[in-house]
Image (cartoon, rainbow, N blue to C red; front, side):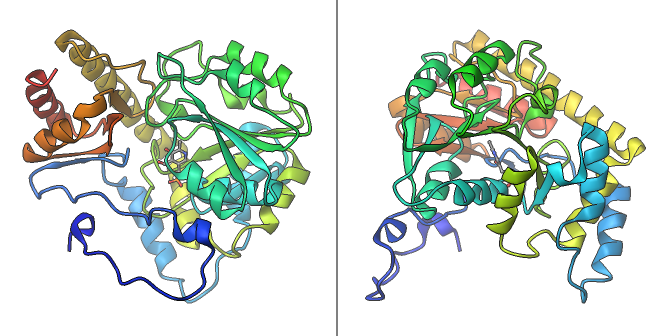
Length: 363
Ligand SMILES: Cc1ncc(COP(=O)(O)O)c(C=O)c1O
């Protein structure tokens, strides 16, 4: 059944938290037709490398056992890579789980979480579930974070500030210089989460690079994922790098044993040098495809903002539903944000021509 057209459920009398009951339930987007393109979730279009698939299959042979609760082998590998201690790495069931853990660790009811908007659509729900309050700071006209306004939005109630670079869904990165100025304005007792889910796709050298800031700030945590560049969205694994006491607090708010052995095996295999080199070649191809797609769309007259993730943003405003429908009729499922715009993932090579053909007539 297509979840989008599912009928309304019968109301319940069970006493639920009203703010939770009011949240829109998660709805998976329309499935793509068999010969179409699913460009709605910023997934990696390639199937896993054979070596990664084998590692996952081998781990599946032991799923009668619980996983290692802290994914130590993966933390060791990542700690080595970043030159940090193993306790400065926290592995989670995707970086969205880690976001939830950090917000829960820092926020009590009434506390505030500041983030740019529009940004990752999971942020508002995660904040509400924690009982905290969202403070959304509008993006600048170029669809990037307004870091000055975000710094000004920090009050005595603020516990967490989320910076998303490049920003999902608009694609605009935060500059290194802008981020450092921002960090200088944020009190050191407020947690800053730098969400770098798309870091590997960034080619703009002025962009912030979280890895170069490790150890610089006592209140900064980096969030990374294996879902996008490493093509492991389906097994759910991401990680955080940051100061030990903050990571320890986030560890205690996790649902235990959320990171499976299958996920850890997949991530470790993806980090094997030969495998990683091949995966990063795919990332190169996607970054080049993105740049070519954006350039062609700009030529057509679309005001596509800077795009540094594996997606482009079409600011379609009131025409969003119409443009999304035209794409869907052509076999392309994109992520539409009604009244605002459409995010289109950079996917299979053949999808680019279809996109350009459909969008040409709709500028
Ligand atoms: C900005 C951002 N952060 C975090 C995530 C979560 O990724 P995952 O939970 O798959 O690691 C996403 C996924 O779309 C994202 O766009």
